[in-house]
Image (cartoon, rainbow over all chains, first blue to last red; front, side):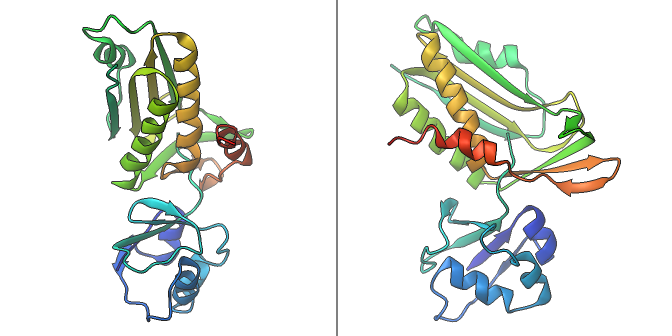
Length: 83
Length: 155
């Protein structure tokens, strides 16, 4: 699946997007964040406060217990500050 | 009643008068247009801001604004909605966002414009980075914006 990062999450991860293949045991957004955090220091830093991170699946906001099965694009970003 | 909804994300500035003219052209059923402009200001919590850079999530930003515009259309008797959000780097005094709502009477237009702005601030995927004399940093979300959006939640 494709993963995108925005604002300071993007800066901390060090890239704007990538394609990842998490193991089948990773079923929810929360589990995906935990799995990514274990991949490197950069991810661990980006996701150090997982409760602050907002997630969208296929362009729609989701909660941390949302299932990631079938997702084409998952995005992680900080609380929004537009307008 | 037709209610055209226009949503644009662009780097270029917008012309409020022109956008209102487009919204009301050839229509005689509109009795009220409310216009809200968000402008880059030079002061944020008593620190001086020299510039703001707006980043967005292309695709989702348009879709999220559209979802809220559609909700506004279902909640109030609107005759037109225009939302333009700029991205890029702005200095104080420059336009960032425009919300126009048209209705037969003012109340629906006022309320829908406020509803759209409250939701735009908390739910549309845009982020501001601030430049000041002390450095550059991402703007933090305010609890007051969440509270403003929460008051529109139907109980």
